[in-house]
Image (tube, rainbow, N blue to C red; front, side):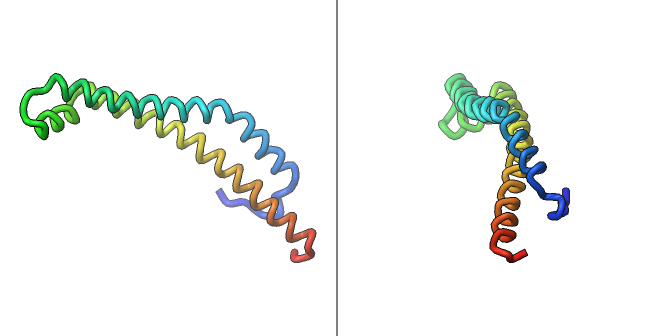
Length: 112
């Protein structure tokens, strides 16, 4: 998504700030969900490990191949993807603000 720097003005920066503010809660909730599901991955692996027979290496492999672990991994990946979508949009808005700051500073200094 290319942006014409001439279109980068205070209105666009205000829009960026609004978008950041509007996604604060969703970003935090998704980050918390990702962290929670990371723990769920560990628990699913540990649970499956304890139920498996064999050597430590065999039990570890069985735990990683278990349905419980696969389900936990899928939930974690889905949450992480949603988090990154919001995170990437927020980072884009932050870059808009940073570019505007730089351009504004350059204009004040007469460099543009």
